[in-house]
Image 1 (cartoon, helix red, strand yellow):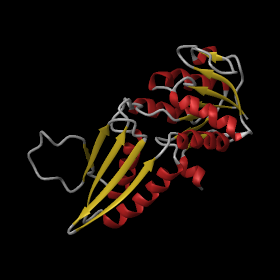
Image 2 (cartoon, helix red, strand yellow):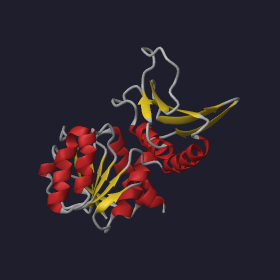
Image 3 (cartoon, rainbow, N blue to C red):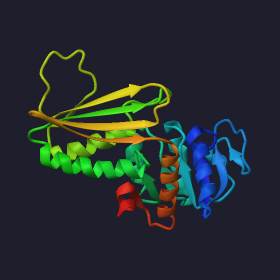
Image 4 (tube, one colour):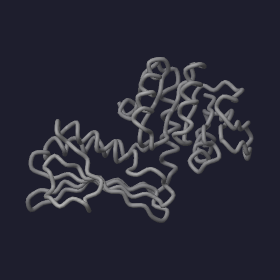
Amino acid sequence: MELVVCGCNGHMGKLVVKAAKKAGDITVVGGVDPSGDNESNFPVFDSVGKITVRPDVIIDFSSPRALSALLSYGEDNKVPLVLCTTGLSESQVERIKECAKKIPIFFSGNMSLGINVLIKLIKKATSALKDSFDIEIIERHHSRKVDAPSGTAFMIAEKIAAEVGDGVKYSYDRHSQRKPRDKKEIGIHSVRGGNIVGDHEVIFAGANEVITLSHHAQSREIFADGAINAARFLFNKPPGLYDMNDMLK
């Protein structure tokens, strides 16, 4: 399989290139980075529109600003996309869904196998505890992370909300609120500091007991390996929107 890495000169992009080399069955034939700097043994283009190679799959670890051009390239050239960038707007997510009707797209807020198994456990716990337990989400990341809350925190919140049902609302900041917690409220809290790779914790707080489910990422390499596995999974798939649940099956 021949791969293009969008955001190839960034920290995650470099890890994806490293993971592809380690995989043995994947060749990185090109990269995209706004700087255009070439530190690798493959051509690097400063924009998606300037790609001259023909990849089997593109993995994107860049920024939300690159999404529109990337989706257009995928549509025009029938190239599958693995989208790993977080911090996307609702309109961008809708655009991804429309594009997935024409090409295969793998889209996930977190490429870790472990975090997606955790989400399955969270769904089960929510189903059993939603009527008598309060639910809070805490996420921690390094000080350089731009978006908050994290894409994974939103992904977890959406799964919890689907289990709880109508009336759920997210609460991000309580300092201005002088009232008790609503029963169908999900608190989402962000911590930024140091070089924390990524911690996610869900607290189920009931009467006289607390259950905590958590995931701790020890290295960003797990996200790069997950993206490579997603690219393998997407190769030769029909058009559609895929995620970790599809791969876990």
